[in-house]
Image (cartoon, rainbow, N blue to C red):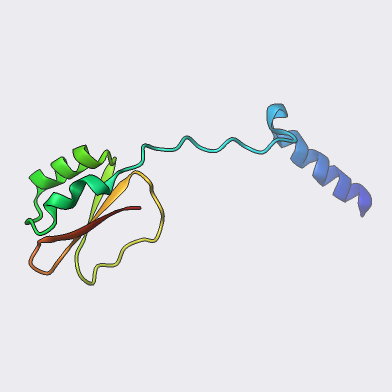
Length: 98
């Protein structure tokens, strides 16, 4: 039984690149984080595609997500994503980066 275990461990180690053995992998490069603080003047305005472009440019976000009341959203964190919360009438309520 020990021989089988040792052989399995040796085979697994052989699959690991030499430069990775004994090291922790480097973290993935962090995407540019967005900055929602610069968008306060847009609260209360009607949501639109033209405003989405402005919000992305000013916040520095790579992606934008509209979140309306009762909308299901994923809970994954993305520092480069701007979340735009809108009310039932399509007016912007608030912003978060996540």
